[in-house]
Image: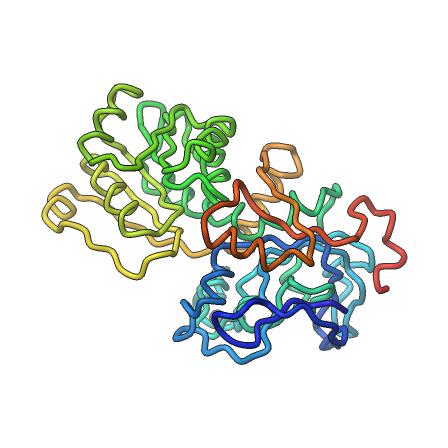
Length: 365
Ligand SMILES: [Zn+2]
């Protein structure tokens, strides 16, 4: 099979023929139909996670994966209800199953966890072995490019916004900010509208083309923050919404500058959630944070149930996608575009695998 693999940091991926992986008895072989391309793949290649992951090479990246079941391991129980030819998405965050985090369902937080594409082989290949418990069967078949990104870009902001909802800062008379309007941000504005019980949703980014998509996806207002001071942005926010402050905000970028802006715009008792990871540190003034009783949530990826919920929304047509379809052979040039921030929406590698069920009988070929 063809795979695009890392042989070291800061090098292009090598597209090469390797053997189709053998599966363990509790694994399922998935024929990859779609693999989303994430900014964290660029970070992986650049060595951002080198300390945390201690990767060995060659490594196949790709953690947003949808595909067809090609083969089922001998110990996969019938109760899993998986069959060859089924369309599935891969929940990432594979925990040990026994720690406190795993027991409450947050396998993505497991201390002994792993993530496909960050150690175990990922979706930048024609086949991938997956533990059977990490698959979700898709009832009504959907296009690869609409399914694959749900497993990260389409679910990570969903979990983050659930935390804001639980914090009690969303409602009809509230204003919520979404920072970033790329892969994650264009999904975040939709969940902001779906989960905020009527709050005014404002998207903030530095690119008008991306903000136009956020508007199409349901943002009530957009603000281009490029070159503007916090006071400028507050003024613009006031003009657009009648409020100078935000009750809630989600940061999908993870740059120090966007987080400072977001926290700076937060109202007394406001809540902020970070899902983006670009920078390495945050620097927030302490007095307004403590005296204003602000809350800062970290939110990491999503758990299996979050993905089931997002998939349920997608299956009912409640999620709109902004996708750039990519040919597998063009992966390296698109990683460069991703690095430069020049991809609008989510880039998804779409493999030559029918999504509509017409290939179900010949999944392993
Ligand atoms: Zn665990």
